Length: 423
Ligand SMILES: Cc1ncc(COP(=O)(O)O)c(C=O)c1O
Image (cartoon, rainbow, N blue to C red):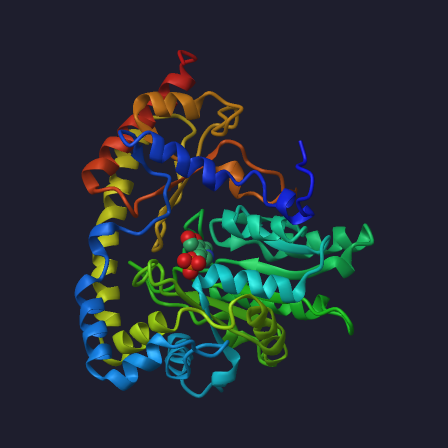
């Protein structure tokens, strides 16, 4: 029942599956969680953070600057270093430091970009499935998420064009403001987009933009550095020759520390002022001390060795999960999974008739067997490509290899029970 006196936004913010999943995990600590998308507690960078803080406080004048408010777009030396994180191929023009805005995690950047581009009722085209928190961000703003079909290489450009044609036919094209993608080791599917698809998406965005209606592409690069196999692919920023279409969202949450919560955006020039205006009204700058710490970590050359360490640690866990999937799910008919080259997730598809969400039986049976997962249906936009209710997201970030193996065995038992009708 709507509560008197609350805003429409308060109502739009209701019903977040992530809060329910976290509450279930906290209330049942004996369960193995393959659900949480958190990073591995044991790998958090205590040593590098200690060294950075020690160096920072060793110079009182600098320490005082770090302990003071900063400026809305963030600490300039760190913003300069973040341009390097784009890893532009040599010879390409780099964005200016003014185009870099530091935020409290990339979620805040995504939020501010949406606040700057979207009015209630506007539409963002997303891969189906996509990052479920971003779907919540859109819902919170009274905006619509419209799913575009994907395959093992992410969003399908032909399906993107079909979605745009459908929306144009329905008279809704002017409401479509952006395309949101996680092109590196997607959350939740773990898939990556090859270069030709990235080029195609940017080309489509430009082609479908109109004089008063610019279609932006939001590249969420949260997992770019967590690559365990293959070669890096340049940011979509590099295929946007006019630099007026692609927004890049980055974060140190996965590659260093989510507790510091330092994220950033690289923005087309025309978006800098609107995003900083929004941010100015909210917090006029993200925690300054954390930005100084990250700048120090980068300056002391502590960041990339930590990323190397994470790559080794997570690739071992990914191998554990994939080996357990081969062993436990392999014998189950109609069960398929993606083998990602990076990131933190493995996406599993079950036979059509098995629902992984609250309207099926698997979720409860899996809890009886001792394991939690994220039902895939939560990751699907509300419109467009329909949700695939027979899917689930598994994460290997938090659990140990031993618990990954136990969790996968428990999940296989649960799936078998549901398949056998004995649940
Ligand atoms: C795809 C994606 N983008 C962005 C984020 C946000 O991270 P943060 O706000 O901590 O930078 C996450 C976190 O899980 C994510 O999976």
